[in-house]
Image 1: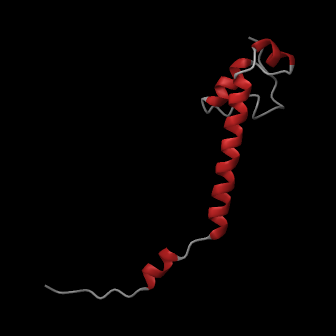
Image 2: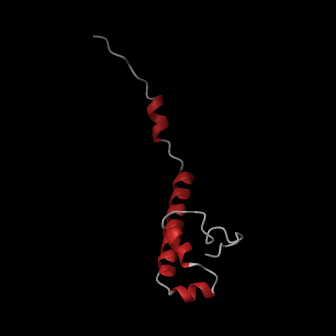
Image 3: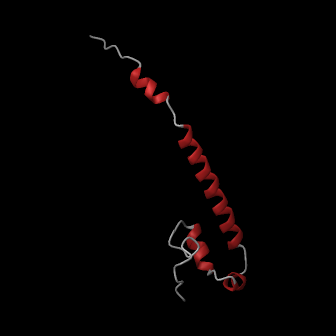
Length: 82
């Protein structure tokens, strides 16, 4: 059986982490947590109050389900009247 000597250069690349990447990842995680908390707060409001501010209750539930086509994420979109 033969052995292969590995130099440490491939291993050194793996230890080099980008602090900016981790910072952006954590910032995005915090942002998603705040979005979710806001959506949960809105989902607890009564439908007539939501409609008074221009939000359809279905849009909130779509956003909670992860559908990014909701008017909450694209306010310039004209809402469809159901």
